[in-house]
Length: 365
Image 1 (tube, rainbow, N blue to C red):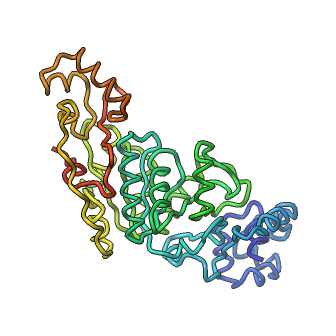
Image 2 (cartoon, rainbow, N blue to C red):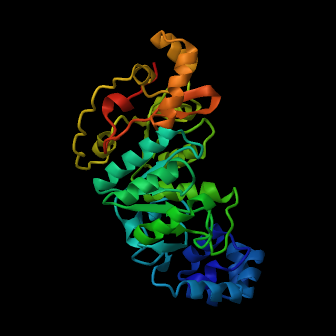
């Protein structure tokens, strides 16, 4: 009944919630006279419900549900995530692939820019792995960049990962994350509130973002430009009384501006994974081993913020041409990544499981 009710076209979820609040179960709603439904939710909704769901859509969904790892979780189902009941407009049903029990476990959302820096992707994956090993499920949105890195880290750890989609659970988007989506379906979980076949339209993603924050105990933003969708997720978290965490970055980096603004507004500054675990009342992660001192003068001068060739030449006293030649060699060796605007960023080899406080705490100065 839940499936037939929610697949009726042209009926907004808020109207269905109003009807269910007034009439009770889906069975009672569908058995209610059209005139009574119209008095509660309007004539257009009453006509749509009287016409019913597309039988082909119902049949296709029932065939999809025949797979052992495909699930339809309705509001009354014991598998329905209780944290979603705390938010405004919880979905009436969820489509899930994989291990839906992961959505019931303590979790942290990790989000950030799609066009993330190499450093940002490394930080997201490393933090996610540490937090997952500490027992938290990593929730994100399966987008390119920070989301994808967070999912990889979560899957590599003990807690695993949950992806919340802005399209149908049977739609592969983005295509570049197809293999990651399949890995999440095998070892984690993929969740959507949208019916099968729903395309990833722009209006869907704010709805998805409220579920990312709603499932989690807090939201950790790793990199975000000023108008990033990640900031929408962070603001959803505040509205839902969730914790908000942000990684600080250089004032010269576009990708750090959103995080720096969140910190100015009161988000918890995160320098290592224990900053998050402590706020959530979780057991601290083991301390990471000390890194050996960096011998290369250019890498020492780079630190961990984006820098230009001119900046490096000035900091080291080495002429720009020699700096450029050395940076090219370091890039080929995987020690440096090029960024937009002619800047470069250092990549550490043998990155420890948890980023060290001194390296990660790039406070605005």
